[in-house]
Image 1 (cartoon, rainbow, N blue to C red):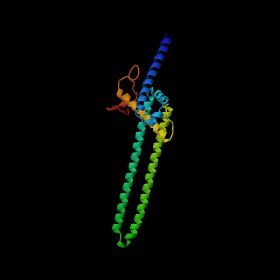
Image 2 (cartoon, rainbow, N blue to C red; image 1 turned 60 degrees about the vertical axis):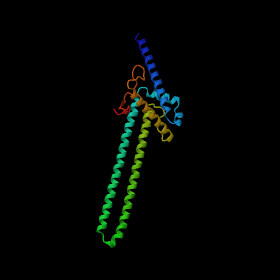
Image 3 (cartoon, one colour; image 1 turned 90 degrees about the horizontal axis):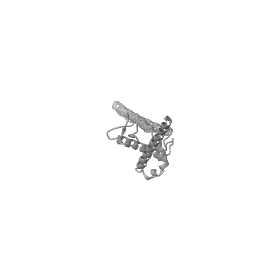
Image 4 (spheres, rainbow, N blue to C red; image 1 turned 60 degrees about the horizontal axis):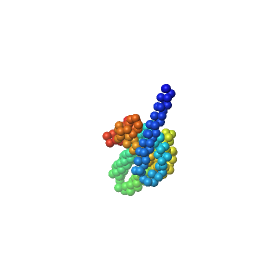
Length: 220
């Protein structure tokens, strides 16, 4: 009798999973229509079905939420680093300008052309140093962001999310961005739904997602 009851429960669980999968797939198909036609053509039924399967238990929603939070923190940190460098350069220019003005005021008139020529060379050297430091910072920012993108791709690939693997191909990157956007919008839809049942037997909602007043996911 217990074995029979267990078998019935397994059948019921399977039916609930199938129903959730169908509803997720239908929601994804609806959201895809909002994308440019060129990307709609690349998101086949099989891809969307595999994506819906990956989203079934809600774990991927949590992963994506965590990845986006890390990305935002990284971008903020890099922005602050570049801002600090710009402030340092501004202070350096101001100090050099003041130094040159004081030197010119103390200089005898017949020595002024020689002093100004030397100051111009010093100014050019400082500006060259500033440009090199800015280029180095920009390269650091690009490399760090590229590394974060690769980490996101690898994490989502390991989580079994369709369409994700480590690549630098611009078209594939754009496709992955659109897939992330689908997941994000689906999460928002789950937040706005509240207690409206998407799944059988109760409300379907990304389990880790909390929402603000506009229905947008916010960090827990």
